[in-house]
Length: 152
Image 1: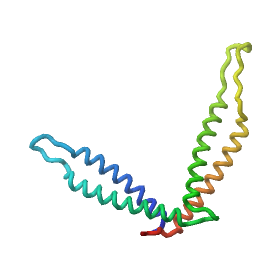
Image 2: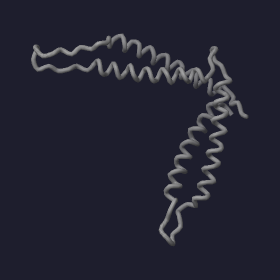
Image 3: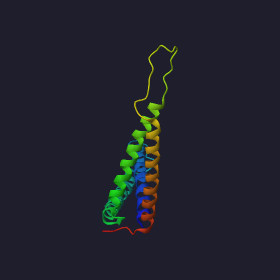
């Protein structure tokens, strides 16, 4: 199995587990004399199997991410770099938005509000980070589809 396939299955299992949780809640109790639409015991068995498979997949994905290197970096390090870049870009974009806001003045004698940062420079840096993020995402995707999952 390719790493990308394992990642897709992990995402599907997370959705499936949430659906099972909801179905269990919907069938947790019934009016006396009635029967639930689905047997909670069957749903619990399905949940247990799904969680067991998810645990195995997460373990294999983590081992693969730690064991595979691209350009001298493990996939784990690349993912951490990606997450950090996304976080930094979010802060930069919010700062750009705030600094770009103009305060309206009714008269010229009122207090003038000016940005304390260069919006142009911040936008330039943000654009560069976006380029780095695209390249990193492309490399991760390519690696995910060419890397065999390390199964234990």
